Amino acid sequence: MKKKIKFYITSQNRRIRYSLINQEKGLVLIFFHGFMSDMVGEKPLNFEYFAKKLKIGFLRFEYSGHGKSSGKFTNGSISKWTSDAKDLIKNKVSKNKKIILIGSSMGSWIALNLAKYFKKQLIGFVGIASAPEFTERIMWKNFTKKMKSQILKNNVLELKNDYGSSYPITKKLIFDGRKNKVFSKMKLKIPALLFHGTNDKTVPIIFSKKTLKLFTNKKKKMFIIKNGDHSLSKKINLKKINKELKKLIKQFF
Image 1 (cartoon, rainbow, N blue to C red):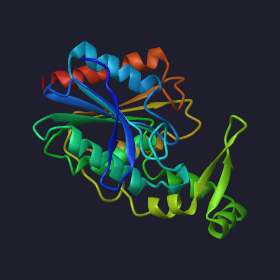
Image 2 (image 1 turned 90 degrees about the vertical axis):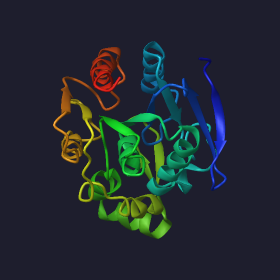
Image 3 (image 1 turned 180 degrees about the vertical axis):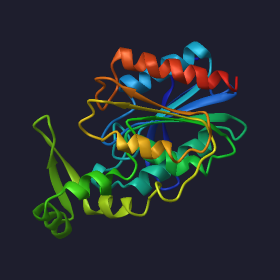
Image 4 (image 1 turned 135 degrees about the vertical axis):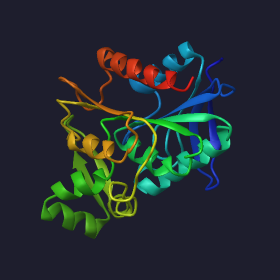
């Protein structure tokens, strides 16, 4: 049960950092981090500890251009990051294992992209501040004409954040996002747990509500976390998520 941080070379020759524990168990939780995040934050480490306590499998990883995985962030896209995740899971998680996908913000979008591919193994979904289609419905929608003109002309826009720094948004990211629509194309029969904070300044709660509608299973629930921020990484928030996730797992194991 040693912590194993390794690198996997995808079919596209991208070097993806990952950690997989207890892969011999019947259930594997898979964590998908958010936009410009990584696999060493409070949430993935919380779920790894959670999995160890329950003696189940857990996989965390970083998309190309994130954390210590190879590649430039500006070369990334939803399609490319979905491909990274699909390649890794397909090769590192046995087909006879059951899986639960846990997506944080953008990670929910990528997890949803893979839900049908892994449908024979998939028994549940957890979305934390889910943000499917955010590139169009949040970014592009709120860009000024000047910003849109700049990204179309220069292929990249330096977007300032609330912390005084900036990050690059590429034309490729925006245009590729339009090829990855999930709200109008998907219905899933598995149980789902959605969590969203009332103080989320990054992604409106409506995104989690729309995500919930993708699931037809009666065992779907949405939890609105009072005073919760976008990350929902505080101990009190993670404790609530862990509690509900444990209930979900007990339905099957």
